[in-house]
Picture 1 (cartoon, one colour):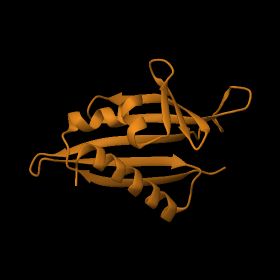
Picture 2 (spheres, rainbow, N blue to C red; picture 1 turned 45 degrees about the vertical axis):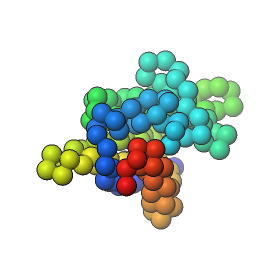
Picture 3 (cartoon, one colour; picture 1 turned 60 degrees about the vertical axis):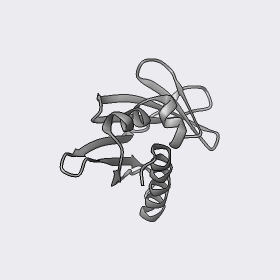
Length: 138
């Protein structure tokens, strides 16, 4: 199935070093992003949303700047299913910091089969709203 790339940027009034653990650690992601997140090795997480298990493998990481996860769904036989070899779903978070305003910006790239722009915007607005509340950001 074809993938759709959704990109959005959010202003977050929090220090980069405070924000980064919320996008790069299991405990941070579980607070705002997924129902449950478990570490399964150095670069592998299990994300659980609505009872469905997804495997996320870190394929790129730059401390306090960005992180990119390759996503696959867990099949009934316990193996991960990643779809077509060259067209994997992924999730990327990038942090930009504006020195002048002392504000962080979080850019989210969601590349998945979900192609309803309004639904994606609503989903990410809600998720980032949760993150901002946790961080005490307005």
